[in-house]
Length: 114
Length: 147
Image (tube, rainbow over all chains, first blue to last red; front, side, top):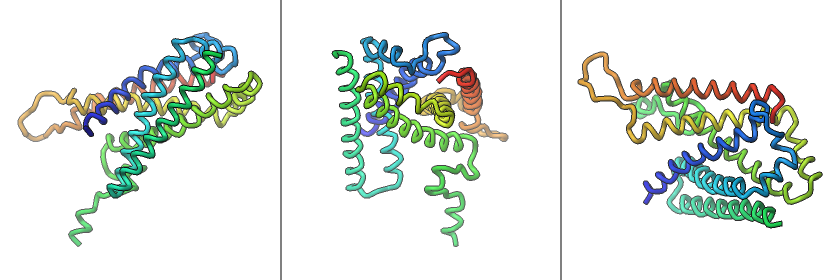
């Protein structure tokens, strides 16, 4: 089971590399690509009302949260806490992940519908 | 005394930020960890800004964005991009290594020995070169006034 979580860590890493590359190129190479300023309200709203971008952001949020929190868990567990402390750490990180995903999904979907 | 000798190359928690007398890959490991934590910190801030300020109107959004046009935060944003490029490509190297790609054929142990780390070092150096090139591309865009 642990190896499976680790394998998901690798797969989410590759997925982040793909999704975040799209996000980084769109958000930072605007001068080279000749696109509009990605931080302007109009540019942001055009993506917020486009289902493809919203889907990309939500997918990126899901894989990034798993990858980041599992990586953080690995670093914390390297401090060799007791089994109980390790369990508490794991469940705290799961709770943080679910809360962040819930909030980060609610906002774009709320804006997409309104 | 023998206990001390045994711990000669022991880094402990210091090893999180310092590679000691280990080889190049250990420095990449330290950077991987530092950039990972940095990206996590940025991700939290990014999630907060892009949700809370987006719930408001145009003025709320633009006043929040104008804060990020501060030159110090521009440099920070550039470092985030470089950290992402490094973390992604070094992560790719780690995945290739974990699944045993680039190990080459086994050879008899005749001096001078070639260990697995040295065989894979060429890949590591190529990846560092790609990271450098991408860092320059993004630096060009940041210098051109991009965000």
